[in-house]
Length: 135
Image (tube, rainbow, N blue to C red):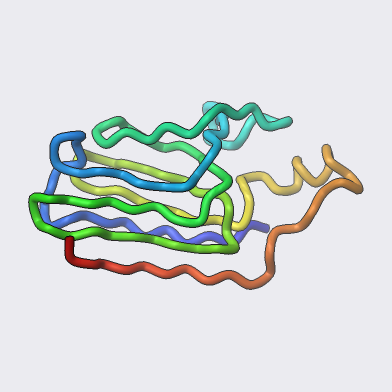
């Protein structure tokens, strides 16, 4: 089982492009996914790179926050979760984004089977904070 929260967000109609928004995060790894959007096991990772305007339905790990800033509307939106280290980022169109902190990647049973005694279960308690601040 994997715990996650799936807020879909938009910034008053601001398009998610490099000219209109800035993304900031401490996520360190991009996790490669299969066509069915489940991670490849064992994990294949590379350094995280998230650019506004790119079509995303991607999994990242190793971080505790994701922020979007817009000078156009003078706002910064931050989602923070110290305990949840996996993040699915999805952009269904150029104005909306889903920022989904999760306790683990998809298909936790496959990982548990592969890792056996080395498997560490995800946290049982987690905090998710969503904040909006002025720039």
